Image (tube, rainbow, N blue to C red; front, side, top):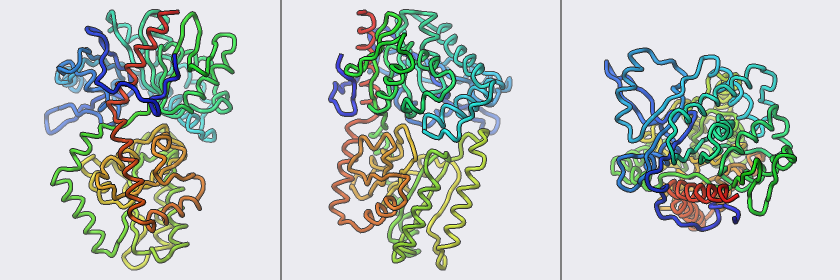
Length: 505
């Protein structure tokens, strides 16, 4: 089988479904909905994010375009449900376009599986932040194992003949093999939504071989980029030399009498829906009003950064690069306004508790140093923005800075490009984000180089508009042609090929 790399190779982009009367079972840590109380009534809100957007059409049992019957398995959430909430949840589940099965986790498992092993060890290590890793908490691993077993048990409790099970992300690395042990002929796909580190980094993990074996329970293992896929293959070759044979040319692993296929499938956006939102007259009016407000203050250029409040996103490094830019090019003072939006996350993980203070102190120091009159260079929001609140900023901004220290993909970069239908904006993008592989026409920078970032800011403000438009047009066309539906189609097509390859052994 040839190497799978939909990032660069054309495939059939027609809507793809599984064989008739077969069901897709999606397994994620995060639930696809949330229970919201309004006055004395409860309702379900679909969770925002690319994964739900991508998979809902495929799982939709009411859709005339697919024969797939959908089941979504996820945890119940960090906050225990009260009896009346559980009753309301069960009542409203019927409103969802697919069946839902939930996995109840204990408070201990949430603490040590989710906050502990997943987010205090795997997350920082997979993002190359070894100094942030908690290697010493002995309760993390057994709770990671028990939680993964619960997810696998939920799959088997709901299993039907012909199911195709698609497991997602670093919280559930053991689930594929746990399912395989219970059901050797089960069709299992896995997708890792964050970077996969190099061997030299991955080898530092306790239980590293157990994690690889867990992933190798799959028929198909997907990553965002070819580099991540190759890192995984090399880790298997070096850490499991007596158990697995790796063929780098075909991106396949043979172990336990099976063949496992590994591929690159860069996730993307529901571009058509996003562009439709941005084209609404009310949304355009908001963007124009926002732009006019800044122009009345004397601002000629509006820049924006949008991130989760996470140390991997390079927020402080970005702000310090802006500070260096204003010092080097003081003629842009008052003329450039940068808006940084940071959505709080993982407040119960220790390293995140101080990050907000660090960012706010950095903003305060820079504004205090550079402010002139009523102008301050950085406007900082630390809260969640709805899509309707965020889009006007994307539409009004002359440039966006997406400069994570390490990122599996980063859909913010693609969102910004997708709505630049007049090719007006400019994207400054970290070369260490997965999106950089697909968007080379962006202003690609090393986020560790303050000099490169300050020069990129200067370039997007001074280069001829036709050059910037040409570069943005290329980025937008890439995002439009490889949208979220392309991602789902390419993965499901490869999933079926991988099952055939495994059954042929």
